[in-house]
Each structure stands twice: as C-alpha cells, then as structure tokens.
Image (spheres, rainbow, N blue to C red):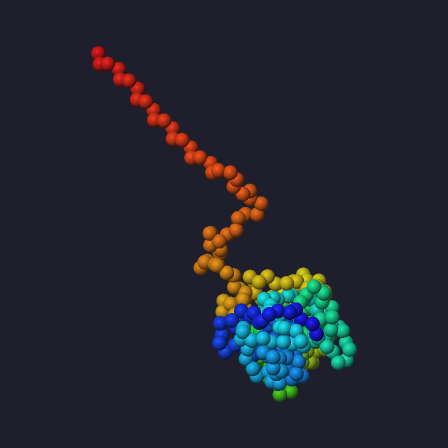
Length: 310
C-alpha cells in the first residue's frame, strides 16, 4: 500500500493529550484503513512506532510519535466527513467479499477518499447508506445510544392488519434475540402485496427481514429511506452527495463535533462570525489613493440688519 508521506503525526484530537490514543485509532483517523484492519496490520508486523516494530495494538501514541505503515510515514489525520449514498440492490457492504460479489466500494467515484460505511445494508437492500472517512464518527452514528430512528419502506407479500403490526410496538423476541421497539405502519394494500413503513432504532443484523418473517410476511423489496436526521430524498441510485460540515456539527452536538474538529472557529454566542472577522465582500473594489477629505462646514448665515424704530 502507498500512503502520502509526512514528517510526523498531526492529529488535532491528540495534540493536547499526554496519554495519547490507541495506535489503531490514530491509523484509522489518518484514513489508511479501518480500526480493525489497522490491528491486522500491526499483527502482521507492518507497523513501526519510533523505529520499533509493533506486535500489539495495545499501545497509545501522541503527536510527537513517529508511526510508519508499510514503509510510509503515517499521513496527517483527515477532517471527518460524511456522505449520503443511494445503495443499489445487488452490492454487498464490504471492502472485500470472499465470494467475489460486487461491493459498494467498487462502485464509488474515484475522487472519493477511502471511506467506511455507517452500519451495513445487505445484498438485496437498497436505499440510504452513510459513508465516512472517520471511524470514530462511524461508531458514534451507528450506536443505538443515539436513539436515531432508521426508517424503511418495505414491500411484502402476505396478509396483515395494522392491529397485528402494532404487536411489535414494544419490541419482540425472535429465536432468543430481543429486538427493541418497532414502529410499523401499513401504508398500502394491492392484492397480496403490501407496503409498510418501518422504523427501528437498533439496526441489528437483518432485523427488518427477521421481524417481517416472524409476522409471516415475505419481503420482496426493502429500501432504507432515512437514518436519523439524514434522508435519502431524491438522491438517484448510485449517486453520492456530501453532507455539509455545519449540518454534521449541528446533529452531533457541540462536544462530539469539537472532538472531530468540526466546530467553526471564531464564532460568537449566536453562532455568527464576529463583525471584525468577516472577509471583505467578494468583488468589492479596494480603496485607492488618498482618503476623501472631509466636507467643509457651511459658512454661518449673516444676521439680517434690524430696521430702525420709527
């Protein structure tokens, strides 16, 4: 593998921490690979720290340490970024598939940096898949602790009423696995084909399909339409669109956004740039020559002469 060369680690998230961060996390933040793959690189003896080969990922590094991966100095940490991607049916959400099936990452635009997915969609599921270049951001977004709703549109074959769908409102246990509360709404019925809108907050492996099967319904199409505040919208199949940094920061909250370096600098309490920090308006002409002189004061009026008394 080839990586951009640099003189030392420049990760703003560890600059002021004496204890540093786990080396696998730092490698992942630099965009080299995922945290898990970084641990594999270390186990294979392909990572050195300050000239010494590592054999364990249980090591913390700071901004002053020198990390080399496959003979190349670790790149600088990248700013956390997020993309919305309309995943097509027939692609697996993995970088390498042992069965040789087409993957999501093979179909991404070439100008995209190395990214990882926020959670996964299975082979035959389509719709919104979030992508990021930052492992910390990915783990935060996919954590059930956020309480973010993942909403799906499901086409099923079978017969069910709204009352029966309401039975999974408080969750359900299937084959010894407990699934949390599920929002299910029957939208449309066409013969034996039904469209259901489903909302879940945990996103366990194949959760939607297993719940539908438990309800004796056969899934014939599954589309994820939103993930928390991020919606599929009118994104075309296969299209990728980056989420603005400001929007990410607003959704994450101040503390998490600051940890990821997403906070805007020099803001006042209202969140707007200070007046003195605003750049000049684009295209405005620069002042030339001497400043204009101040206008001269108008001369005072002379009083009118009084008429003599008669």
